[in-house]
Image 1 (cartoon, rainbow, N blue to C red):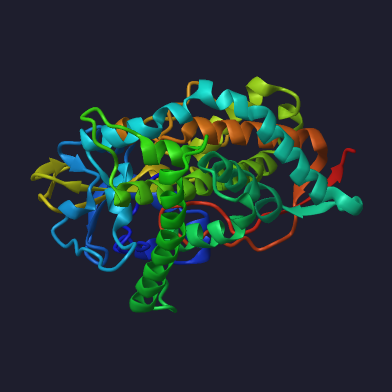
Image 2 (cartoon, helix red, strand yellow):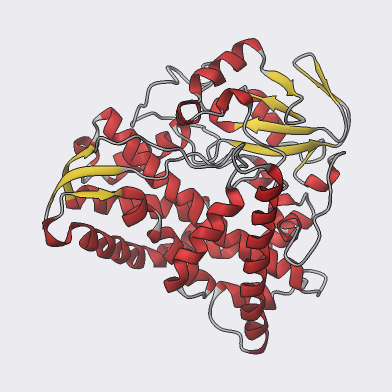
Length: 411
């Protein structure tokens, strides 16, 4: 998972406020790369950075560009239970604290550790497809019936929380990554965000207390009982924040990766060429991560004055790096606005870069590979159904709320 400012300060740029603009922001990205690769947006009180080399440089320099939003000049500490917990997670910490926090869970997300999950993920994908085609159905919503429930169930099982509460998890996750809307108003938006964080805090505090007394063979118990190098343990706030972070990160990214993949494969008419070819599918998933990155942007805070492309960014300024633009940069990729399922090499920034490279990238790749492989094996003649796509309501997560498809089912 990647970051935006949880205080709602990274609202949509004016250029991306409509449905059509956020569904296809890539023309605007290209214009910015050419005409204003580094620009200040006074309405959002943020700098925007669009070119590949600049985005990668910023993500690779933790000393000059901090992930900690508390270092912003205009940061205001949230108040109340559950508020600001996310700031204490590794997502918003710089080394060395980031590394100490990440080490607690890093082993659980290594490819070797995840390999044992593959049969379980495949069985889950099969069950979801069974339900989708039951009764001879020839249409399904990729998001609601497949791409959303699969990763939520997987991360819930890893953490040791009841998967049958996944609808509540999705509601919480969606709320916390939403961007504010003009219709709702900033105050009401912030109140809803705060209420959601309080609900999540109450829910997880009960489970954390139970794991302290009765550790189990799950990731939450590992987090609760972990001993750091100096012999200390994570604070209750850090444990709580990490559980919330993993739950959100464990489902949002994969849901949109799988959904965006189906959208890309349909537009490129490459379902048949990928079916039954694991290597081709793996390569195509990397192209999805470049072409329609599930995470389009991350936020950093300048810790000192720095000049970039002739612009002076001052210490305490907020910077939004647009990975979705970097991944379409013609200075880095040949024919970047064409989806090439066999593109290789493909050094995209879909999972970020540097210290904060996405912890869950191996899990997201595994889930996407298994889910899409099963979908291709089970369904023939896949086509996007005639529907008006609605983008996810987030200023950094990129996907669609619903993706109906038509198909012929293979029993």
